[in-house]
Amino acid sequence: MKNKACIITGGAGFIGSHLCRFLLEKGYRVICLDNLLTGNIANIHKLNNYSAFRFLKTDVIQKDQVNKLIGEKNINYIYHLASPASPPQYRKLAIETLLVNSIGTLNMLNLSRKFNSRFLLASTSEVYGDPKEHPQKESYHGNVNPVGLRACYDEGKRFAEALAMEYFRKFRMDIRIIRIFNTYGPNMLATDGRVISNFLTQALSGKPLTIYGSGDQTRSFCYVSDMVEGLVSAMENNNSNGQVINLGNPDEIQVRKLARLVLNLTKSKSKLVNVNKRLEDDPEKRKPDISKAISLLKWTPRIDLIIGLTNTVKFFRDL
Ligand code: UDP
Image 1 (spheres, protein in one colour):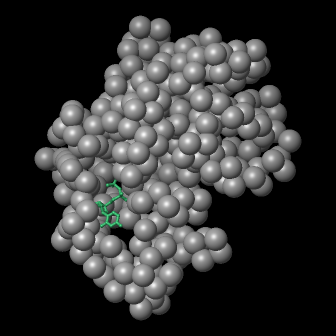
Image 2: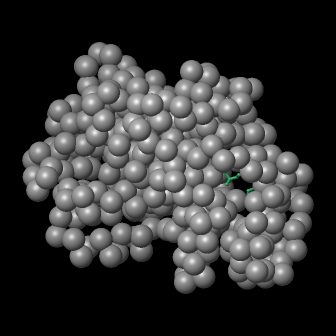
């Protein structure tokens, strides 16, 4: 394993930083690329204790910055995670989101081709839009508004998927596309505006928990260690080449029930308030069908929401 190396774009982000650590612990050399627009340097601070870890502040939209890596030796795997991913972040960085998923993906695919390395595209359940099929299977083509407020992310990722698939077809590259469903855990940015980070921050500071709309909408939350194991098995599995695979936890919950669960776990006296802040095209329901991941990767999420949230509460308390 000593000579095996991975490049992780977005490696200072929430999922990326856990992935860096996991791969370092497995004995890989890890090169972490991040422009720190939404990534957090504190997430990777302790990884500097590993001599096999290297962080290069890099904007993957910039071809000249990506091409600085061409001389690297034995790059076996490229995990392309770089992108703003929470609704408030990608609204604020809408153009950057479109560009990192289009030009950034192009630059990383070309680099991967030079290395002859395996490539994993981190895509998203957002490609299903506000789904009319429930739960969502990989074969579902989605219900996406191409000009709406979520389009920069949804369409950016849909373009990235299409591009990766054409590189797979044309250049016979070893590529897999992973659709990541809502994921949570330590290293989430407290200010990223996602539902779990908002609710935990609000509950721990005694502020009202902001339920957007009625709170009837659902999501299915996957703990980050499960997600990282899924990503690595998708990369290392010899049968995942050219495949599109959902990863997530199918345990579905309404947003208002999640709010109550957070109050229970934090023993908070915060109130629940309904606010009219749902972003246009906010999906009503979301739940992955993970039968493909189970059969192909022999992967299944193991951490239930109460245990995962308890760990995450501890992280937020310690902030
Ligand atoms: N949400 C909420 N309160 C918040 C933040 C989000 O009720 O403070 C809702 C949001 O409207 C959505 C769901 O929680 O229906 C999940 O939102 P999040 O931003 O975490 O991710 P999404 O799955 O929409 O990308």
